[in-house]
Image (cartoon, rainbow, N blue to C red; front, side):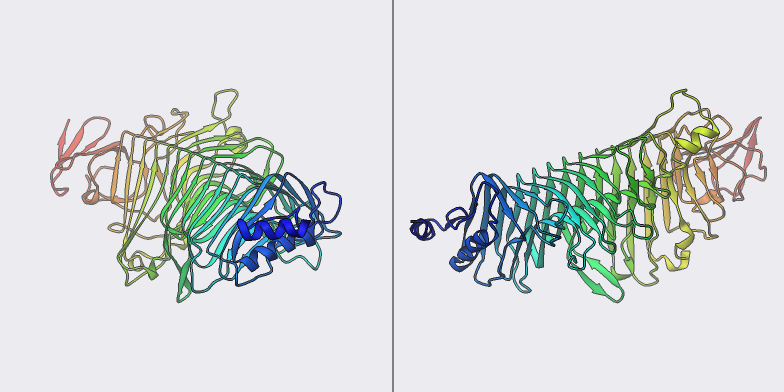
Length: 553
């Protein structure tokens, strides 16, 4: 009778009900063989739906593919259906969906419990090297309790939901899913909640991702990331040139990830918007934790809520956002944009940095433009007594809003392009605002800074707008920044008056200045595009050419 039912479904609708093949929805008997028979039948048909009726299906090892080249299109559909993957010792896979000629796939309504013995949840790959996967969608699914067991049989990196295409795919979506508890004992692996790689359009939206942990072993506290999106790439020399894609990571809740909330490696439109990112338990962040890590290309990070609670440990070099430049020596006449805007960052336990702009690569031949926009962000720090003390800075406040470790920057001669930074409208509670760490380079003509309408509070505490040891740029446009008291909050690096960009209205410290008045007692510089003004305690210097300065008292 069961065979007749199976036969009729195959002929009429290409629906392959796992119960018809002998799977036990009560969760008592091992259903692995029966479920794999349903998948094999679908593969033989070339396309169809593998259906999991409501129930719990105990499986001793993974279910899914036999790697048949015959299958092109498949749906895996559940209805309150749970795969209870419970091997004797350990397993690499739960729902294993790799096929050589996969054209489209939908996985919907499936729950997986790895019982802390199984490394991966739902993993999908088109293995074709010549044809794209047109559509890969996972929605309304839940994956729980994955674990990379310290066993010789385990080789898979623990991951909740993974969609990949060997040959660049068209569209991949992970929507309205839950991944929680991705952990490991085995060293040498990396853990991830959700990942899409090598698709032209990638969407991860409306998901909840929680508790992505590293091994806890000294020397192995590495990647433990909530979301990853990577584009395809071409290797040129020693660099990977990432393709342009349209990626959207939005409306997700991502919390208690010990490595990153989000990691991207892609160019094009990469949008990370309206997410809630939270560290709110007694977890151990990796030392170089990054909230959102936009690597090697572009990223638009907007309107997200970051929360760092007061119970985590680690994160000695942590930051909320890292803007990593592409290896521009492999790009010619390209522009790249990264933006961090409209975000709210609440900090209850100190992280040292909010934003880490990173090193532009060396290029003596190719021309490029790199744009970094930091706009209208708010950084709030817990401070019960509403005062700013040394203790507060040590235990609560980030040391820097933007920390530029330029020790590895190329020389000005080897930076054949332009960097344009716009830092506008931010309200931050940090110790310093923007600081360069080292070097002795003049990046004038290469690095343009537009910094306006920012507030660093408490405003009465004396710190600097721009600080540097010796490296600098004179291409500055600075105005309406409230950074410190009347004698601070200014520029503490060298600059040339003739290279300033209007509008300017800022306090000057005591650096070496070029083409300015002879006196070093002045406090304020203004420039409206036609006239330079330099104020001191008793009067003002005026000039229209930075050659002849007139003193007015």
